Structure formats: C-alpha cells, structure tokens
Amino acid sequence: MDMMTFINLTWSAPLQIILSLIFLYLTMGPSIFAGFAVMVMMIPLNGVLATQTRKLQTKQMKEKDSRINLLNEVLNGIKVRNVCGCHGDVCSMHSCHRVKLYITA
Image (cartoon, rainbow, N blue to C red; front, side, top):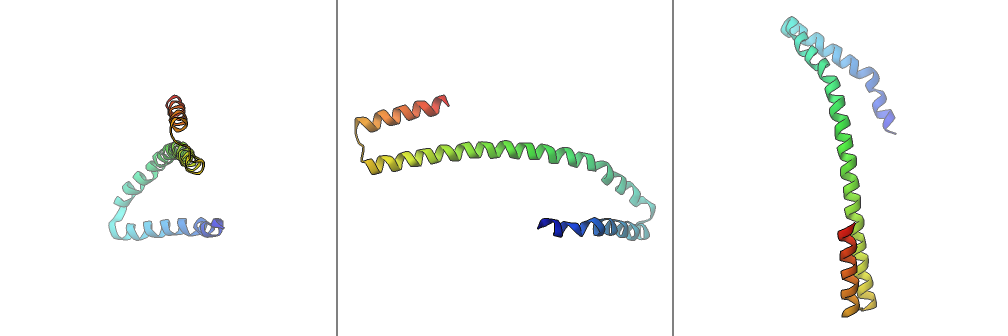
C-alpha cells in the first residue's frame, strides 16, 4: 500500500532536485555547487546515523517488551491473589519468592 505513495518519488524527487538547482543557480550563481557538494557528502553520514538509530531503537523496544512482560506478570499475580483471597503467610511466601525471582533475573 505504501509503495503506491512512494512510487511517484522515483520520478518526482530527481525532477524537484534538478529544478531547484536550476532556480538556485539562476538566483545565486555557481556558489550553489558548494552547498550541493556538502549535501552529497552528507548522504553516507545520514546512512550511518540511520543504521545506528535503528539499532538503538531495536534495543529500546526489547527493553520495553521485557518491562511490559514483567508488569503483566505482576498484574496477573495481583488478580490471582484477589480472586483466591489468599492472605497472610501464603501471600508473604509467594511475594518473597517472586521478589527473589525478579532480583535474580
């Protein structure tokens, strides 16, 4: 579905770049080539930064997933405790075991 949106960029993006360079050249003269050269030299840097961002985002999502799984387990434990009506020593043993489990994990 997104391909139909971006397929127009295959012909319109180069056309827009060429037209903007022509209009800038007519306005400012040959000094625009310095700016264009800087833009072209920044393309590899943009690729490296995008790769690093993707890696960091993947790592962040894994951390979020583990945090959400832990929260779901805690909430399910609370639901079980409330449904069973467990109080006193049973709950303290259960919570102590669970705390040890989470500390070691």
